[in-house]
Length: 83
Image (tube, rainbow, N blue to C red; front, side, top):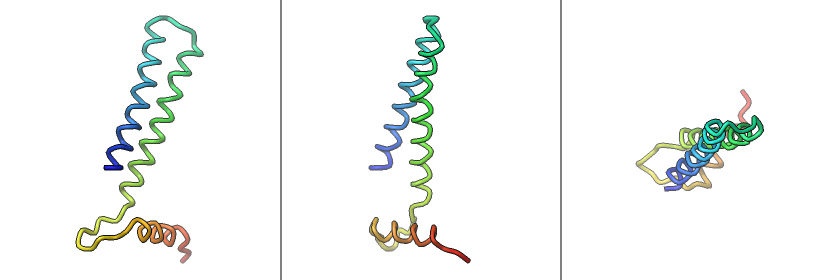
């Protein structure tokens, strides 16, 4: 549920930025407003990337339930691993 909520927020931010940018282009507005419309598109794209990355890193073991604390600890251990 949290993943779907995260995706929908990211898509909403991107759609809002596209709406602003396309409206200002259609109205023949200044370049500054077009750039202001592109800012939410960039932020939403980064947010969507991070949400997708977090979902793909999560463990997919369905046999045993793993708490989010254990998953976070494992992720930290992987980041700190030095061969």
